[in-house]
Length: 139
Image 1 (cartoon, rainbow, N blue to C red):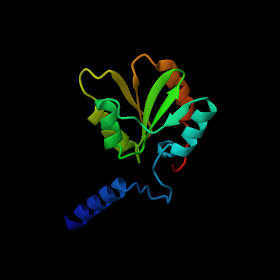
Image 2: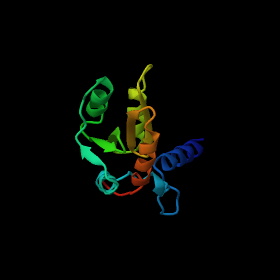
Image 3: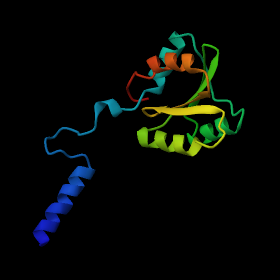
Image 4: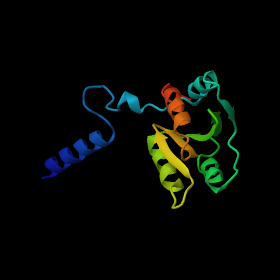
């Protein structure tokens, strides 16, 4: 009985830690964090203006505060888009959950570890943004 319990615990620990037994990480390479530096360089090449996030209303202030300063404001194609670069996807998911409130005038979604906040209807600019939020690396 003890041997079976020890084996079960060992399998659970290996699974939780990402061990697959073949010396290869089980993490999907596509889950690597998006690079803030590379993403912003791409956006500048697309003609975007980038600045620190202005806390002009409650939602933007909350995004800035919850993301602990890893935020920028991007002006692209006539649309202001707030970006928060979270350390990982789980942190980005949490940010989206915390920012989702009834009556919110903004669309809030996640692209990997990046939280995107923009006024509803600014989808053309967000499509341009998607092309730049694809450069991976440590940021």
